[in-house]
Length: 170
Length: 425
Image 1 (cartoon, rainbow over the protein chains, first blue to last red):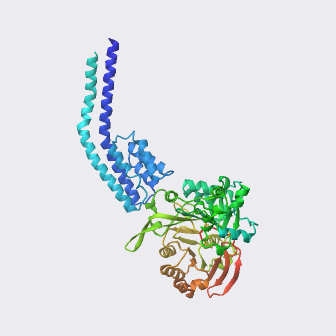
Image 2: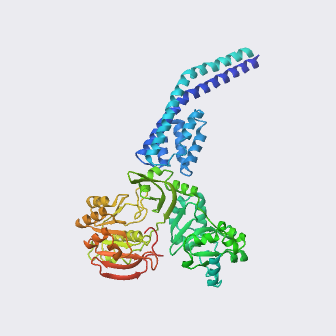
Image 3: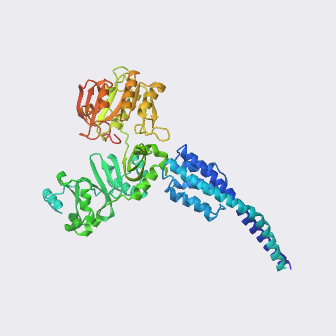
C-alpha cells in the first residue's frame, strides 16, 4: 500500500512539475522576445550613433538587458572577438538556446542577422536590425496570445493529469 | 621556356643565388610585425609568420604586405619585392620578384630551388612573371623540368575569403565603424599600420560613400625609427632656444616621409639637439593617424614630452583648431596637397607658428608643378625644404634647401637611425 501511495505521489509531483515547466516556457517566451527587442534596439543605437566596434556594441547591449538574453549578447561579444561575426553569432545562439524559451521561428529571426552583422555601413546595419526587431515584435504579440491561452491551462493540467493518473493507480 | 633558357644561358648556370634562404632557424619576429600578423586571416598569418621567421633579414625591413584576390601573397621590403611560396619539402619561403626559379636544378638536387635573376627587359610584368614561370597551370616549367619540381614550388595564393577575414579582423567585424576611413580608401589598425583598400566603389551623388566587394589590401607596415631625423634636425631647430624653421619634406610615396616627420616631432619636442635648443610645444594634426598611430586615444609611438596629438581630424580644420586651443610653437601634419591645407599653413604661419609638413613630390622642381605647393613655396611659407629619396635606402636625404631654393646640404646622406627608415612614408 505504501509503495502504491509513494508511486502515486511521485506521478503527481512529476506531472505537476511538467505542467509548471511547460507553462513557465510559455510565459517566458514573450518576456525573452521583449528583452531581445530591447537588446537589438540598444545594439542599433551603439552602431548608428556611437559607431562602436561590434564586440563592444554587443557588450553594451548585453549589459543593458538582464537574464538569458543579456547572457546571449555577452557571449556573442566574446565570440566575435576571435571568430567571424556570422560564426560567432550563430554559435552564441546555439549555446544559449537551451536557456531561452524561444521557438524555431524566433531563432530564425535572430539567425537572419548572422550574415549581416558588421558587414555593411551604418544605415544598412540599422535597417537590418530594424527588420529583425519588427519580426520579433510580431512574434512577441503571437507569443503573448499563446501565453494568455496556454499558461493557465498547463499550470492546472499538470496537477490534474497527475491526480487522475494517481487515482487510477490506487 | 625560351625566356628561362636564355636566362640560364646568360647566367651560365652560375646561379647568383638570392632570396630563398635555406636557413630554417626561427628568429623571433620583430615586435612591430605582431600588429600586422594579428589582422591577417588565420591561414595567411601562419604562412607569413613562417616565411618571415625563415628570412630574418626581410622580416626586419618588411614595408608592405599585399593581398589581391586570386594572386600570390606579395611582400615589399627594404630593397626588394617578392612572393611568399611553398618550396620543396613543404617549407615556406619568399621568392623575390624579377627572379625565376631554376626548377630543373631544384629537381635534380632534390632540395630548395636556386633563384636566378632575370633581366628587367625579359620581365614585362615584373611581379607576376616569375610566378607564372613556376606556377604549374601555365605549364612553362613543365617543358624544362619534371612536373614534380613545379609542384614543389607553389606561390601562396590569396583567396577571397582571406581578404574578407582580414577585413573582419582589421575592423573587429565592424565595417560600419570605419565607414569614414573606408570612404577614403584606407583603414588603420593597432600599431599605426595602414591598410589601403580597393574594391568596387559605392557612390551617391557623385561622391564615394563606401567600398564593397573588396578585392585588394595593401598593408603598410609602420615602423618607428628613432634618429631618422638626425641629419635634418640641425637645420630645422634653432638657432634660438625656441626657434624652429617651417619645413616641408618632399618625396615620392614610400621613401620615409612620415617616419622622418615622426622623429622630427619627437626631437623638437624633446629638445637638446642642436646644442642650446630647449624643446618646444608641438601639436600634431594626425588626420590619418600615421604619425602618432593613436589607438583608443593614445599615441602608440613616442612623440616627445611636449607633443599634443589631435587625432583623425581633417588637416586644414585641425591646424587652425590646435593653434587656437593648444598654443603650440610648431604644428606638424602629414601629406598636405589641397588648397584648404595651404590656406591653413598660411594662417598658422601668420599666427607665428612654425609648420612641419610633408607632401608627395619627387623634388623641389616637381613640387613647383603642383599649384598648391608652388603657391606655398613662392609665398615663403617654408624656410626649409627636405627632399628624400631611396638611393641609399628609404629615408635617404637627397637635399636640404632653404626657402629661396638654395641648397644647404647636397646629398645623398644615408638614412638616419638604425637600419634605415622604414614604415609608412
